[in-house]
Image 1 (cartoon, one colour):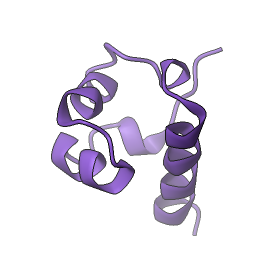
Image 2: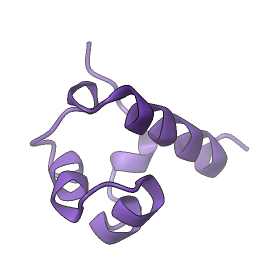
Image 3: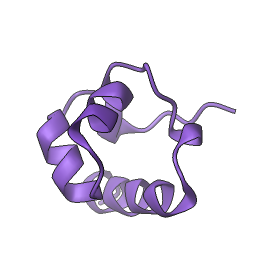
Length: 59
């Protein structure tokens, strides 16, 4: 099951995602380029992405 999130649509840079999620810049770039799926990340990072998505886009 592939997860689609607004946060990965290019509104944030790889650097911003890297800093906000505490992940390497290469991982953030892979997510933005769709070379890496959210499902491939560990549960803690997936939880951070969900919280950030909610904070930025669910108003």
